[in-house]
Length: 312
Figure 1: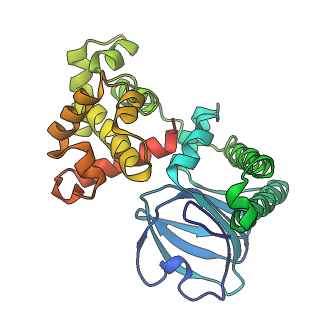
Figure 2: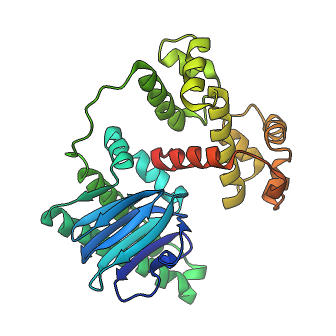
Figure 3: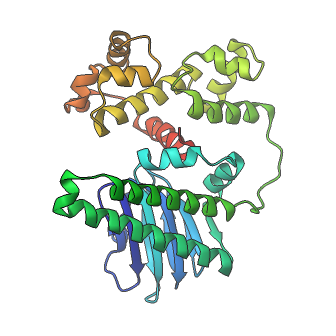
């Protein structure tokens, strides 16, 4: 089952150029998970090589690069992925934040037979709920009367997706990781980035993030700059720009509403801020003038991945 925003796809070794990623590296535009049910496959994600076999799961994130090196003919697996605006609210409901960091560091794990069966069950139920929703949407009566049945189908899919994400997180709770203690500066950076991705929409001042760690703004800024090459202000601005651009391109939300959602004083202030940082106004960007923008694409990618990983 596939649509523009969600993919649920069965993968098998008899396919030619699976996901278009066997002949060349491709950019992943969704966040999700792949469960290998049978066979083997070797892949590279963002330069890191993984060997997947029966009962392997691997979580992948939007804006990563994928290349499939090879696979066995008996390969079978289920791939599920969704757009960021679907995944973010679901991730926000995950209370085990440490597990999310472990997933980011160790995306590939071998699960038990019991965990595999549970994952398969949720995946099958989710696929069925999404297929039903699509079938009803295509029906003529569905266009004019999208009421109780559609609402129930949506709720079913949402609850199943929540259950699946929680089960995936559970698969990573017992992962052993490098116990080497982080330096104080590493802790400051990690705490800043974690807090930033949760609070950047409402907290735009460097002093807020410094205060949370009981540091002076100057000392805090020097740590972040030395560890990342970017100042805290650049991190905050980039996070806001990434989210503002996403909202401008992926929705019909008014510029006024976007400015309110991102806690700017008013629409006029937001418009001036956006133009100062991009060279064009919000509406110009929405109407396809983004080619005029010159920015640090690599850094934008880093921040974008972080936002998609942590969620709202």
